Image (cartoon, rainbow, N blue to C red; front, side, top):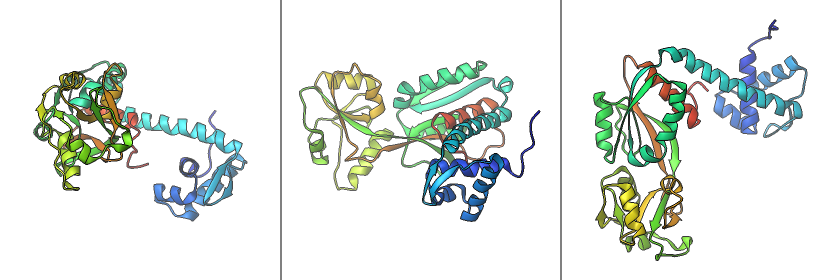
Length: 307
């Protein structure tokens, strides 16, 4: 038999969870959009419910007791289960079937998407995929706006206002050079990059638009000399000594056999933000699209608006 809980137990537990994970009440209040008295009440109510002390320390330095640590572990499991349950009820697995159309920029398409789809496919075996890759973000936007694809994934600095963009992760840029071009990482500057023979898959790709935009802020133009329209071929040309290139760091991390030098550019370029793109206003969304959207939110630990 399930014992009855007093008051709004889940909200008390939620207040405890945010205070414990944020480390102090000020940060927790900001995350939850609650005032101090409300948050204090939730924690005291939870302590009274269980008859234990959950925190020691001050308001700005909350330290979990042993009972608090135990409860945090169980609360994290509970909230994960609730999020999964919410999505499962919104799109029951038995109703998640049919075609799912996804388009993505090539780096994500080639190095991250396959593993994601493998796990998603195990959960929803009645979904089949229609996948396309590209280099031009304008084409991706057009395909989503026209309804030719359900979900797009890319990094862009100019997403149209009529599309919904959910941030997924930040991607560091890396310089890849032939083995004969070596230098200390901290000596790499924009002027150094400008003097390199660079190659790119396409000068108007989202990656090079991002690089060009950041360079322009310093009055520098960075232009690739060689255009090689396939990423794997581009990297083979770098290995052969034809040129150097700049790519997302996760691309080269996924290719440990690559015979090139790899240098972080985090001190020169800001990381690129990758997004999941969908139509903003749509009367009905198919269950397989809703299921994949929720799956990506969980995989990349994107917070739900209600959290």
